[in-house]
Length: 268
Image (cartoon, rainbow, N blue to C red; front, side, top):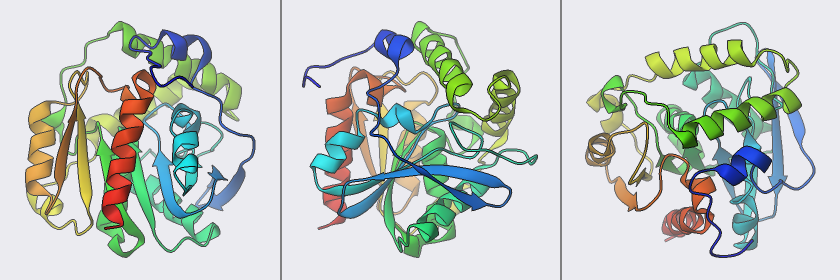
């Protein structure tokens, strides 16, 4: 992949998806669901948690860069997303956090760094609150932790392109390929109502957190990112210019440099 690769309008992603992940993958059974995951490389473990409606393939530009940098990369399809199944319960970030811990147990990973994008960021924060001894740090990109942090929704070409790709991927990967509309509504209900962390909840987080905010994020206000960084003890705020909620796809090199900076900071 060329170092000047850019897909600012997500035209490449809409047409073809991200760079394909290497072959492989396994399932872990947990609480009524089969959770798909794949592992690449060797070294300190890093778990990649994708956004709502997406799947692990959305990290196609990040996995090779992290493997090349000497990390064990674990990509997980969240419950009901990608290849993972779900039961009849409503979606929740806490349940998805529990699923990630189950995958860690299956892989015999005592601790791992979490890189979360959108819904994946909230899953990572839920993990940090529940079991900080298992989380070396959280890179929290592009999500709100209470309703005040969300912008009023406005459809844009980039959002439309992303949803189009998610719909195509769901039809290809899911065990229920015709259920995208119901899936869309169920995930949307979770996003509208969860999480709702108080300032005290955030103040109780005891792991290193980097809050990463994109200049043109379509969903999250910059004031909310500032609030998170000010309220989570020791948290750092990082800003990326020229990109939006879809930065890992738009400017992979920029986003990868932020991941590597975060991970190197954990080892100091």
